[in-house]
Length: 244
Length: 245
Image 1: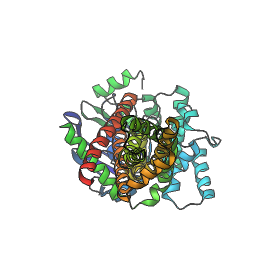
Image 2 (image 1 turned 180 degrees about the vertical axis):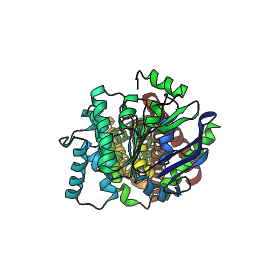
Image 3 (image 1 turned 135 degrees about the horizontal axis):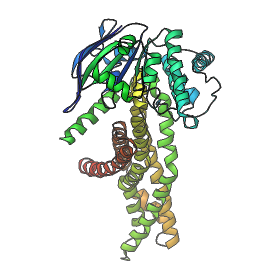
Image 4 (image 1 turned 30 degrees about the vertical axis):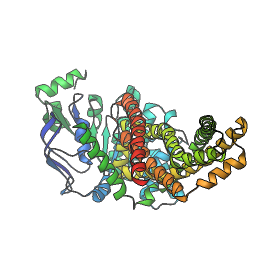
């Protein structure tokens, strides 16, 4: 379980948000929504401690993450898989090697076992025929899927998705949404999805956190969101040209 | 104020690289790749630069030493000693500040702005160990090799320059070089090349690692890496000459 308590973050004089508190239960999928610049990705980067807050705590299974020494923090980070907005594939190696990359450094597996695990991950994202293509040869959707295969190859407990459907056509977006649901179901993973794509939220989320006006403006289940009379939240949903 | 921020972040980056240097298993593959890119791949341009520097130096020295009572071997002495204690190391470093420094800053800068460094960290890698350490070590290890190549190329160029212009025969050139040869000069040149290798790679790693702002940010980081490397090479050259000679 991830518990965020009174988290406040600013960059210089620019306050991003303050006193953000929420809980993410095991196995659930939380969607964090909000306008561009509302600090959704910044919040995500606090979970695996790529950023430190001004104040507040994040605990994972009761252990505070910001107090951890770097060596322990690196172990903790291996419990997270992250799909970055642009997939963040290493462009100097092939798509296959991108997926194999964490296995080569963090496990003692032999090549045949590594191949097995890589193919298993690639199958889950329906790209088991990717071969030795370089990331530059892949479409946006394929890059995201390879990024997802790399994120799950170490069998993490948590999956963080940063704008998984941004820049993709509706059909490919739906494929990614299916994958997010599939990952949560088949791998029993806790997922945090950063997005402003309401279609995606309605497909994948169990709970929704809405960041607005430099705070956590609304937090609840998907059903509660559908029936909410929260003005800013409804306005955001309407602006997404999506009716519930 | 920005200067203090830069110095602080640079020191922290280097401290982190040194602190994590025991994790050899994490970076030995990258170290070999970087040694090839920094050392082996730089040899053609270094040999070219060294060769022409030696040739031009011989021709110009013979032009300046017009007095008949100065023996031709003096040209060999001047050219060889200048190459050993100054020109081979400094010219190699200035050439490689552009070639190696710009490459490193661009590579790391692109990785930084496309979240590849964040991706490494989020997988549990120490990105400094993985990216910075092998590049700086490759610079420190390979620049002395490059220096030796530049000296050999410079001497060859000097010999050829002497033959082509008729200013100094081979035997006289070599005699002059042998007369002034001192192992201390070689040591001085090697110390210089160590320092220059460290300056170029560490500054370029710093500029690339902390690059922000997309393609423009990477461009700025690359330019700053090359320019700052050149400036600090000249400053370090002065300090080393002052202290060691």
